[in-house]
Image 1: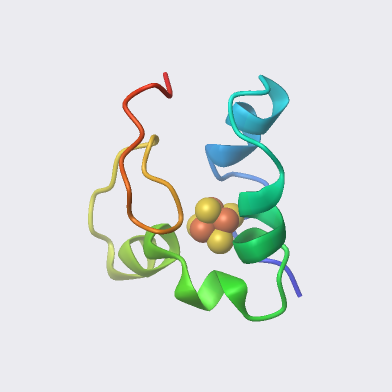
Image 2: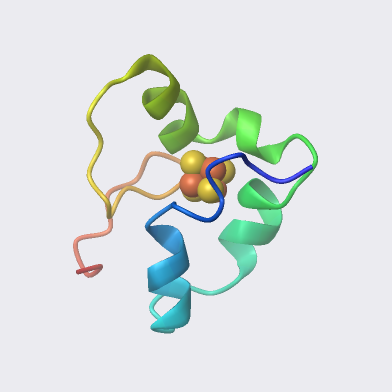
Length: 65
Ligand code: SF4
């Protein structure tokens, strides 16, 4: 089961624009349990702000706009 926020996650736009590869999605977003480990998921679930350019491992990628 993929992440419940799959369709609305800003990572989809970065994928469409070829700014990130599909590895993030495979490891986290579409993985049976990977999304549970996603930093973005955890912050969203707690209602804590996180920028669009934060990757699932919590790293901020300043090159993502
Ligand atoms: S980056 Fe995290 S919050 Fe976004 S769809 Fe993937 S697993 Fe879900």
